Length: 199
Image (tube, rainbow, N blue to C red; front, top):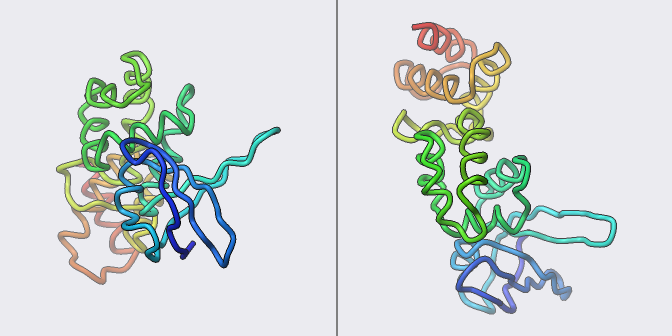
């Protein structure tokens, strides 16, 4: 959604912004990082949105980057993690720090977020350790491969479809891409990545 920022609330943490789209104001919930990234009131903004629909509510959430929205969706797939907790985690941690925490099993880092106790942090770490690789690779294991990264993302999807864990698939595809160079075909990426993953 491309619009104009007309107001901001609770900018010290996860909060809200009012976005004007063609004369209609939308109240958008967002992480502190997204609120900071939106810039000054009155300026033009581009925001990625997610709508939550319940029996008695409609909530619009906004994200400065599509990657942040993808991580929000992943976090809320964990039992006990609602929108408020997911936004708190995304407010407290950079995405690279969140990736690193999940890859290393560092639940204490995730527990820094408001509303996240030790048990919930452990559940998040346990459930997302492998899934996080599909979104961003394991920190320190090569370039970040997102689901939207064209042939690289398709190669990761192909390997996970063959039974490899997302983290393993992402690492293998990153290694294959490094060996083959930019512009490698999907077939070549998958073939080389399979060899890397089998070692």
